[in-house]
Length: 314
Image (cartoon, rainbow, N blue to C red; front, side, top):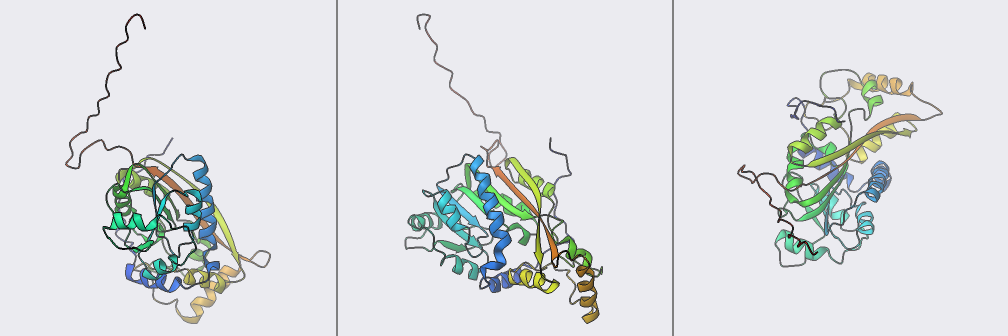
């Protein structure tokens, strides 16, 4: 049974600098694929979940596509579907277009959804809260690790709900609050967000319900990556664009002494020559059910025809 929680609300004390995030993801588009190992492992697990979900979408959106590494997986899973990739960082979309991926049906999708009559690319630059797509135009929205770049999931879920057709599926992954707990503990405890804050699974569930989704299913598991040293972890976070972008993040770390203390604190966690980094992985999916009210709030009544009366001789 699902626990009851207070209705979702945005934490006004936490907000992300979207301009900084876009700039970082622009740089990260040129990074080596080795920095995306976590995302690729999560994509594999998301794909496994689809083995147990009956869905045959005609149109699929990879929202927050990054460099487009999941597109080939989606094309293999849904060979008859038309694929579309979207990201808010233009360099990510540009790189996604270079990925080898079946694309025979993509141009027609974009011509219809984006209203153009010319050949269109298989990716669009768009914010997740304002997608340039028609209402009820998609059968599946796949979003792998896009939500950590969002400080309030509700507007995003509402927009995804808008573009999904009735019976359409949202499948997503994100990171939970215990992510990078070792780094959080090692850094000096001063005012501001030292480590990026991640949204709790229960708040995500509340936001899904508030956005109109039905039957949300979510689960959480812990993954631990190991690094040769403190700087190797920081390098991966920076290279992937995933370093802290909170508006109230501290500028600097109290000079060399602050960094030396952080390295020493983290190094005490070393086991077998490696340093651990914990990631709380949240996976979820939810369906767009038939609406119960019209957009102006009136109830929708559905009537089923009576079965035909059978004669006594039947």
